[in-house]
Length: 237
Image 1 (cartoon, rainbow, N blue to C red):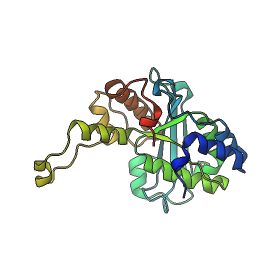
Image 2 (image 1 turned 90 degrees about the horizontal axis):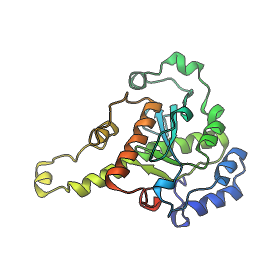
Image 3 (image 1 turned 90 degrees about the vertical axis):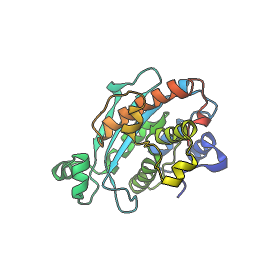
Image 4 (image 1 turned 60 degrees about the vertical axis):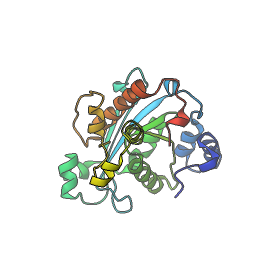
């Protein structure tokens, strides 16, 4: 499962995929290109993305909703936000219904991921994706796109959770007393991270509100700890 380009680098990987992809929608996505690693974050076209799933195991679970919203460091383009509920083609665990508030009847009426895959790729085209905890988004998107289109989607991501974890480790390095007493590191969950920047509380586990929350968090992280001139190579994974 190739989720990262390794030494090739993201722009070169996109160029290679644009030449070799068989699926027209994926080929168009890669042909739109990838920002250069030296591009300043303030000049990058950004898109916050969140996926909600039936569980955390990408082998057994599936996507139930996706939310995305384009933004930059100055503004968030709410009028261009998109939200989909999709049928995971399996029964929803009761815990999933409780967490996401997406019901069985909504799922039964929703399209499968394959029906919205090309629309999703068009929305992502030419933009740098921002998420909170990239492991979930990467694994589930990789699996869903491969099942829908027959080929994989690999893309760079800015992970606000990883950025916050790195910032907190630098600001509050664990001491020997913390290790002795087994004190847990500070939480970098989305809501807890936002509180450190005095950002408002939104409904959790809704794909669109979580995407908005992620976009605002990155804006705050850059404003407080980085600069609009910070190159993408310092931020993406």
